[in-house]
Length: 287
Image (cartoon, rainbow, N blue to C red):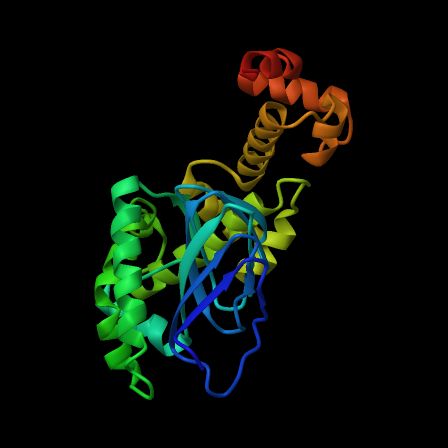
C-alpha cells in the first residue's frame, strides 16, 4: 500500500481498508479529484486553493482556502475538490494516532477551523517532506513512522492549539479523561456544524458521544459557553447568511435549507441575530 495517495483531474480513489493498510498516509485531492478515507483512519485536511466538499458521519462541510478539518477514525469522510481546488491531508491508523498523542501533546482531535497563510505554507513544506520520507519506510514500525512525521504532527497540533486549549475545562480527574470528554464533545459540535440544514435532537448528540442527554447538555454548555440548541440555531443562521450572500435562492428556500419550518420563524430568528431582515442583509452583502 502506498504511503502517498493523490487524486487529480477527476480521479476517484475508494477508501477500501486492507490488512496491509499503512499507519500513516499523506493524501491529497485536486481539480475534481475525490477520495474516501478508509475505515479506522483518523484524518486531517487543509484546503490550500479553491474549495472542496467533505462528507462524513458528522455531516457535510464546505472547505474554502485557509480552512482545516479533522475527522475521527470511524467517520470515513469523502473529499471532493472543485475544478480549481487543492486539498492536502494526513491519515493515521489507531497505533499511529496514539503515538502521535504522546509525541505532539495534546494530540490531534476532530474539529475544524482556519489556518493562517504562513502556517499553511509551512504545513505544505512539511507534508511534502513527510511524503518523501514515508516512501522510504516500507515495512517500518509505528514508532519509526511517527518519528518521521514529528515535524508535521507538531505543526498540525499547533494549528489546533486554539481549539485544544479548552481541554482543561472538561470534567475529569485525569488528563486522559479530560481528553476523552473533549474529543467526544468536539465530534458533537462538528455534527451540529455538518447538519446545518435541519434541527438536530439532543438525543442524537447524546448517542453520538455515549453520554446521557443531561450530562451531554451540561458538559457542552460548560465547555463552549452555549447550549447545544443555541449552538445549532447560531450555526443554522450563519449558514443562512452565507446562502443569502452567495446564492440567488429565494428567502423561503434559504429558510427551508437551514431547517426552519416557515418563513415567519426564520425571519424572527434572523432579525434577532443580525438586527436586520434577510432581504436587507442580502442587499447589504451585494457587490
